[in-house]
View 1 (tube, rainbow, N blue to C red):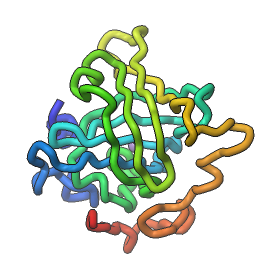
View 2 (view 1 turned 180 degrees about the vertical axis):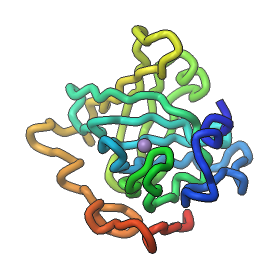
View 3 (view 1 turned 45 degrees about the vertical axis):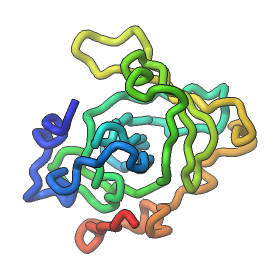
Length: 201
Ligand code: MN
């Protein structure tokens, strides 16, 4: 997909988001970063991003991830984002695309189980997460029934393993609402002075 769509949607003289011009390519064998950003846009959602081929493959998950394998969470495929976006936490100004607060909810690495490119193409991606909040096996499964020209819908499903838990017993979103970068909650973030860049280690 590349970053053309990402750039077209944004005015970088107005938003603190990265334009993807710097170090957006990585050599083969580089670590695969994983991040989930909690995004208080018009509707609160969680953006799942997996590093692949020099960009962050991205899905918007309206209800966020669940540790319960029985909870299949809708994940709407969105445009690729630049690698630097993975360390972004801040406020996108009013009137700009995706306006609202972005909080770094989880980060770490992901490990594809099998060939990632093939999984993405076939719509069945099996992977492990080594994040600060999410771990273990996960699946992204693309749905067939998508509207013509619409964004592909996927389901994000926890693998039934030792890191799984029933939704009634553990709600990871309520248990750990804070930023892994700043420890802040969404309510602590305000526009102006909060366009924080946390360098990625
Ligand atoms: Mn978003």
